[in-house]
Image (cartoon, rainbow, N blue to C red; front, side):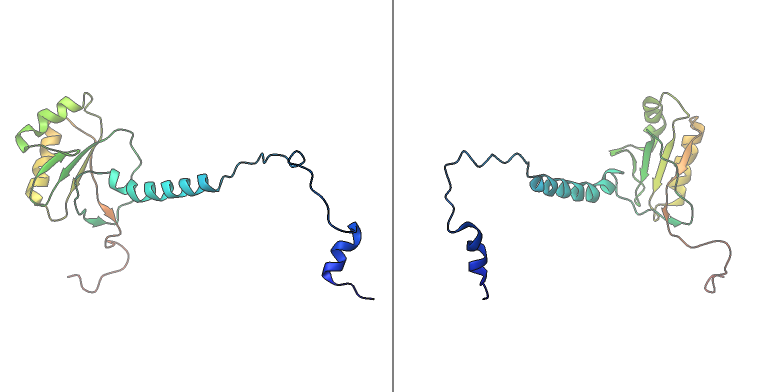
Length: 162
């Protein structure tokens, strides 16, 4: 004699079981972490997208070079030069005549590193003048910031180059 699925479940107990009140069933003591994980993933994505935007306030198109990445410095001064020649310290515009006094006010120590972020289309004359001004003001840790991935200067010859 074969039993159906319905008969198999009812054979052991002999019928329906009665439930007696709510006291038998205990409260759930587990915390549902799914909403928290969802919120954390959304925050992670937001921070991943916004982090590159926080590194520098003035948008410039940096020239590409084959130079390697620099070590992170805790508190550098960032100096940006736009294609039109406008100079910025952080996000604040600074005229060229006030550049040296303003930097001396900001940096009590002339060994504090200065990162110069010049747009690739900025005039070489302006970049050279800014670098000379920094050097004559006593700053010795001057770094030019560029993008990586530029053309290689060693090893293989480029056929298009003269």
